Length: 255
Picture (tube, rainbow, N blue to C red):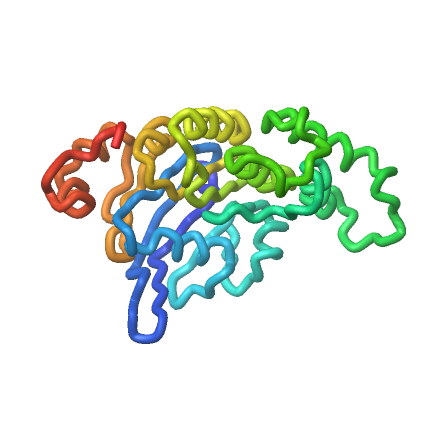
């Protein structure tokens, strides 16, 4: 049996006397797309921050490709092959689209803090940045300042930055938040394309996005994973309906 890409093992996290994550456990196989859903305040973003190293785990363990990442800083976890986006667009607004992507690939190609390299002479970084530009559909906006892009284009660029370093495990935090339906549909197709062969874990409120992308859905309520199953089984799960929607209606794919 292959090693899961990501494992949360009885993870707990409290802020003061408030326990936010209460023994969350989840195993994400390599190459699959998982979505985390749940009501507001369930602990979804806190889980993301624990996995990416922004918060320290209270107790339990988190494994990335079989290795514990407890105590590691976010950049150390990133170097082990995990990259994440944020709810709020996180880009360099004054740099061009191309320059944003080139920044994202430099460390993964081994340049680190090599100040003696001339950026324009880094052929491999240039080729990788150009390839990601093509993937995310922003080639015609290559030389535009990132701050001048539309909101949907900025989100596409952030996804590009997230994948540019070549990470195998991708975390996307509400990637379609604030988008129109047509923009959201385009984002789903982009995410599907750029995560082929990678492991995806995303937090998303738009159920049409969740049911359109996820192989499995994990439902988090009061800091616990109460169910993890296929979209069809999650939609029909009475326990999920009661906890997530108060028992008033089934989980719909077009909510």
